[in-house]
Image (cartoon, rainbow, N blue to C red):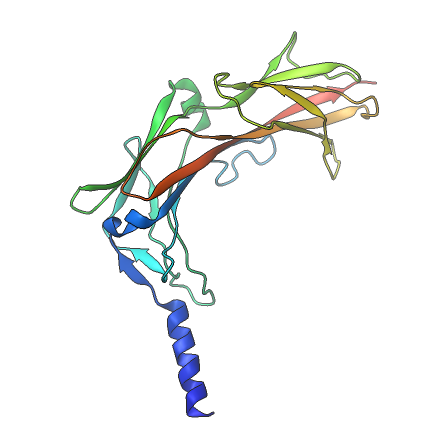
Length: 249
C-alpha cells in the first residue's frame, strides 16, 4: 500500500476516536438540555427510562470531549448517574457521546410528596459548584384524571368525554388521544379539543365493541429559574397515561 494512503488512514482513525478531557469549567460555552419522561403504561410498566429525569450537555464544536473523573451530579440532593461522554471504550463504535446525567424516580413517591422545583447541580471533585439548573415545579407526579360521573372505565359511542392534565395549573399541548382495540395492531387517533389542561373527545360511532387501551399524552415546556455555569438551558416534560376502557354493544 502506498505510504501516503497508510498515513491518511492513520490520521483518519486518530481524528475519529480521540477524546479530549475537560473540566466542568470548560462547559461554560455549551448548551444544556433537560427532559422529564413520565410514562404510566399498563403494558410493560417497568420499562427502563419510563420515569426518568435527564440532563444532557452538548459536545464541543471542535472535537469530542470527556468530563474528567471526580465530578458529581445531584437532583434535589439525590445522586444522579453521570456519564462523562466521549468515545466509548468498547470497539466497533465511533460516535462521540454527550455528557449526560440521569436519575429514575418512583412515581408513587412523587405522587405522595409536595411539588418542588428541580435543583440540579454538577460539582467538581473539590466540592465547588460549576453548573446549576433550577426548573420551576418540575418535581411532581403528572397524570390525567377523568372528569365526569363514574370511573370512566366504560365509554359509549357518540358520548363526549373529558380528562384533565394534573397539576391543572400547567397547560400542556397539544394533548393527543389514541384508542387501541384489544389484540389490535394499530391504534386509532381520536379527534380532540383542548381548553387549558382539559382535553375532550367524542367516541366515534364506528368504534367496535371490545376492550380498548386509551392513551393520553402531551408535552410541556418547563420554566427555567436558574441556569449558571453553562451557556443555555432548555427542556421539556413529557407525560402519558394508559386507561383500560370497555366499549359495550
